[in-house]
Image (cartoon, rainbow, N blue to C red; front, top):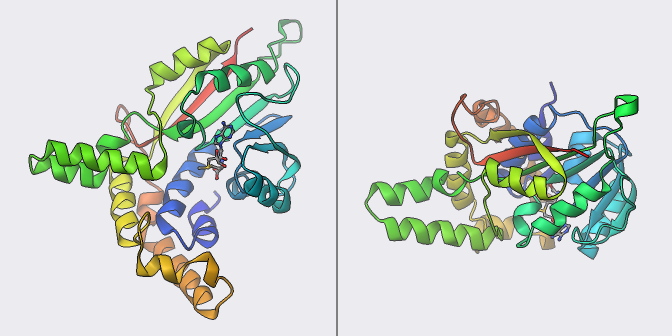
Length: 281
Ligand SMILES: C[S@@+](CC[C@H](N)C(=O)[O-])C[C@H]1O[C@@H](n2cnc3c(N)ncnc32)[C@H](O)[C@@H]1O
């Protein structure tokens, strides 16, 4: 089994809670099969695909953000990188056997047209050859994300419903999350795009989301903090950052291991949701 926790703490040492969330995410995503041609929709800088697929293993990376596209091109993960928007994919019908999208759809306010575009570019099933349709594999924060936040629950436990709601709204704003669909709502959106829901699997169990929420505060993520200053990209290359990076990897790859390895108990929900849709016709 790959050790995504150590790999991601090494890559995201400047934001350790991000590494924790992403490591659990990749431990979940790595269980899926990714047939080629493979499109990474909203690929960002390519760090996540690098950890999941390795060098030159993804056919196309696509992102609307120019700076991210440049970094993705340098990452060596993609055979081709394109700057484009998910609302209008510059590919012919049926071009991909798999579309992968990690932590992207929650940032798109009107997501239905993007899901329809994905359905269009996936390969249709070929009953003559016994070939199933292409698959859309994506991760998003789940419908339980807000209520599993540590500080949301702490405020509610004190009877402060309004404070809890305000806290969750601040998190939505900081993380630029526009929606948290249920598995059934994703099934409906997939159906509009000619796909059927094959799987919806929760990850990030409650104790992991609690830790993640507390650690965001400890590291001062999302606000001005001493950590933010020490880890600032403007100070990259200075000797202290190498020491900080080493400390983060050493300390948290041990301390957070039990959380990294934790699964959502059967019948319960988690803060993350992995969804698999399959093109039906
Ligand atoms: C949180 S980042 C995730 C990046 C990468 N998938 C990862 O896991 O590290 C969200 C990405 O979605 C991209 N994105 C936002 N709106 C998009 C859209 N309409 N179509 C495609 N990508 C979009 C952003 O540019 C950004 O790179």
